Image (cartoon, rainbow, N blue to C red):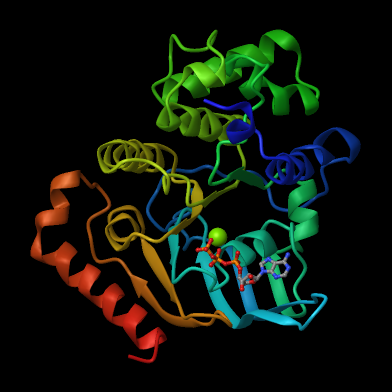
Length: 304
Ligand SMILES: Nc1ncnc2c1ncn2[C@@H]1O[C@H](COP(=O)(O)OP(=O)(O)OP(=O)(O)O)[C@@H](O)[C@H]1O
Ligand SMILES: [Mg+2]
């Protein structure tokens, strides 16, 4: 595998933007970490808090020829512990919306709050773990050294960082591969390293931008299943971009369907599937009905 397919400069810069404030800025007082594993309820049994609130948000990119209206009046909420899929045609603004939430892009109008504070404050508070479409790993560092990097930047001691990294590698079923280099792994394994790295500093929100888009169907199924199990265990808030209706329906508790550019929300579909999921669920009438609803919403977005 070529080195430049592992390290994309732009993605690494973005990744460092999300990680670096850890060592340079104190953690602002926002909301306490809460990784309680329950369905829609906080540890005290009260309804889950809002993790992300987007109000009438628009993004217009200023370009040399003409402004590009990427997002228009986006309005939705994500509760803590939800798994939200963003689905829509290419160029409809899914990545832009992810970047806005993670403070990698500014909105032109509207408001975005993450855990009740601005995305910039949430970033400083280490709210985000970000998994990009390409793994963006450092090829000259071993798997272990890639996962310990954000922890070291954060100021963790070597032994601590190693322990935490090994724990997270085990969670994504990569125990035994810690001494390998990224280029010695398959694409799916590299993505799992990225997921372990994103989870290693316990972010409140896991942002995943088409993480499995480039993988074959069998590997993708397996990773979908692993991600689903991981979410079951941790109930971390996840925002997940995909082009696959089946992936969106299988993984998420809420599906946000977007229209072609300028991206608008066509429909927000709350999943009726049980929380415990296995791949066989995809053959059930309930799953197919949801997939049909998503397909119809996508067609509506196209004006068809
Ligand atoms: N930095 C930028 N400058 C100018 N235009 C941009 C920029 N980034 C994105 N765009 C434009 O904004 C629109 C939305 O792009 P975005 O990458 O968010 O789409 P997407 O839904 O993620 O697409 P895909 O599914 O292909 O990844 C596109 O028309 C794109 O050309
Ligand atoms: Mg995109």
